[in-house]
Amino acid sequence: MTTPTGSPAWVRSSAFDTYGGDANKSNYQSQGVVNPRTDVGAEGFSRLVADVAALVRTAEFCSMLVQCDDVTPGPPTVLNCRLMTGVAATSYVGNAPPSGFPSVARNGNGDVSVTFAGSYSDEYGVAGTFIVKDPVANLVASSGGVSVPERVSSAVIRVRSFDLSAVAVSNAKFTLTVGSGS
Image (tube, rainbow, N blue to C red):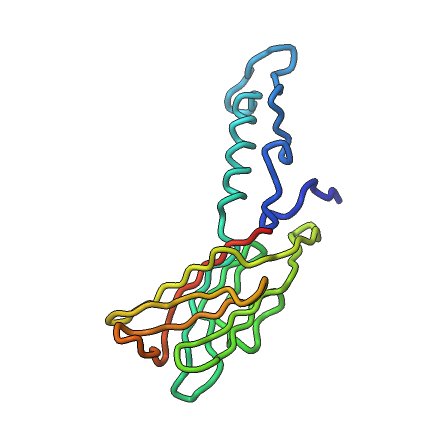
């Protein structure tokens, strides 16, 4: 098995040269592409690695949809969760996440804490530290209000949902996207 160079995408340390780019890259013996259906020239490859590096710098680590359970009250349900490391096949109860997915705990009406691991591994087993950056939350299917994310620590985000009168929204449903970096 080949272990890739560089760190996983969520570490945000890769540049175009991590992917094989080189400012002095040229075609072999200055020959251009012989067959454009099967060959990639140095020009095309250089564009590809620069674009991949840009995608890695800006891609979100996590996107999830959470439904609070404030009537029971009980743990929130994660309706869907997509991470750079995988996608949850089905919804899950926040206090019993599938391996490798964030847990979600109820703090109060419309108030939850989302806890990530401090490190994740990619498909090749290369581990990279995870640090929460730039959380964005949006209240869904409400007559008005807001979900406010707050970074509590390097791996925990607290999300509180309020209506337009600044009252906690019971059974709030919100999306949360999270970046990463150091």
